[in-house]
Length: 363
Image (cartoon, rainbow, N blue to C red; front, side, top):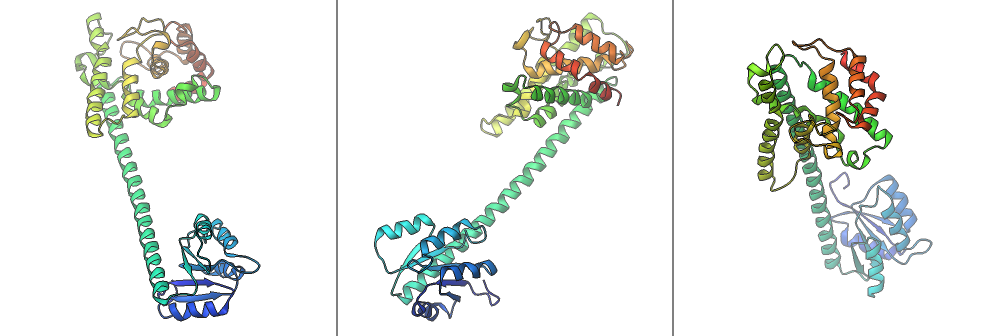
């Protein structure tokens, strides 16, 4: 559009009479810019855009087919609608032009009402197309902004729930944050080493780490007298404490059911990871863990990873009934649990990364 608000029509034809006729028909309503050659038209488009191009097919030096190929391959001209001007009426030429990106054909000699109406129609279609594209772009931005907002809210809720759990369990301060960081070290190392790649490769790692915050969510349902007891639990209390795993599964499944109903059956990887963490982080490689007595690779990889992160943090943390183990002692205990309590491959990964664990444990 020019400075007077008129649409710019570039007419490219090597015949001066044709250009004069186009200007005579369209000049009152549009800003018509005549060009005697395709090269001249392409040069003008380098300096100023056009709203539409009327392009003759048969021209010396560069014909319309070659010109439209160039137009459609340049970012600043590819979206300008092109109408071919032709003396030919055969379908083969029309098809060739349409395949190259033309939107229409107008035959010579020009019928003024027909030329005016075709130009008006195609400019209207282009305007509607751009409006629709702008709407789609804005809609996409709105969806992305809403998604970011929802994800931020989800993360805030998860952190709040995690903080609530830790507030009730006074003796495990920052346990959730540390275990997240331990998990990140282990998973990153697995990826670098190409281990368990089929499983790890399918994960959204950020989502996985965030979901691990809920591994102890079931502690919400444990009585304060047990959860906050300043001493060792007796056997009966320990059995009650073990129920935090099944309570956690139940809590997450209720959320999943709600999401399933709301999303008409769509899955949620975040909650699925969270449920696996909650359900399997107390299982042991030799099958002696709880609540299901799973063994070996029958234990989900998420649970086997969390088992190491969780135990290391428990060992190196102060408790009312025990002093914190040194980093070295914790490493020795986990090493002795290789292929008994812990996945042997993950144990080796842990041993390689033990110095990084020590740094986190001291924070």
